Image 1 (cartoon, one colour):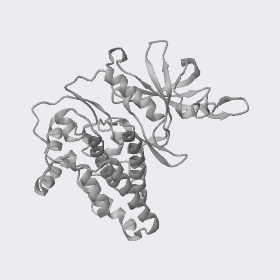
Image 2 (cartoon, rainbow, N blue to C red):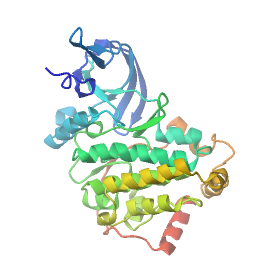
Image 3 (tube, rainbow, N blue to C red):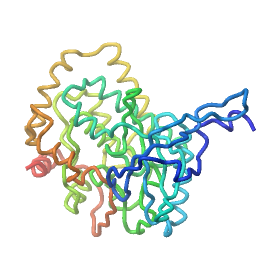
Image 4 (cartoon, rainbow, N blue to C red):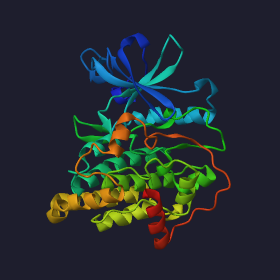
Length: 368
């Protein structure tokens, strides 16, 4: 067997449950219970040419995600799961899935996933008032690199939102997580699964995901990275679905770089055919990032605090402290905006772009 075939990232294991210790309940993410644990042996790290075997990393912190309703899984769900495991083996900027385990006490199957320190929502909660535009654009670049890997494998993420973008303090990079198997196994055919604020209008109407629907979600993420708060806080109902279909989008904050703003608007266009593909998008955001690395606009960066004060006034958020009502709710887990769930809507209009007057009016109604 070749060394390449034994590359650690290409191995997905069956992990005995008794090899996992200190298992602790963490939270419920969407439809899945999430636990932290320590894996005694750890994942395969590197090939030892002298001993002709793979060396393990040793004690490793991991996340366990319970797989819901596996007994009712259909072929499509299983195919997405296989694709998930294959893409995770690519390594770079995709959260690695080490394998599967089963709780012998209740029979529940669980994914064993690489541990990261926090998600993008939590990262923005802690850092949004001190991030430069250069850093925001770099975060966007990381996300686009990861989605590029997914799309190159002819796969669609289907559920991109700030809870599924994870941050590693070790290397200061952001990773995309929660492909395939992380959603419920038995979603009805007339329903969709995801975080409504990030779901493309054509998916809400037609229940069909595409590369372009991932691009729409990236556009909403770009806004969140630029603004701080998540989009449409605590709005997860039929009214929000109708507003998204009718072209309502989050209000772009003053001072957003023009090229970034234009890309964001292209990504969330109601016409999916007008959105850029991930290849073109990645090239453009990389160009913008290189420009900031070479010639940063320090005056714009210095004035970013004033931009946030303006934005936070609109959201009735106290910009002097992150311990405001919005962030308190998020830390207590009382908000649902960061979770994915199953939606079923009927009698919906065709997606369209809103006029500027409609957009301004809709935004006012959403934050008041």
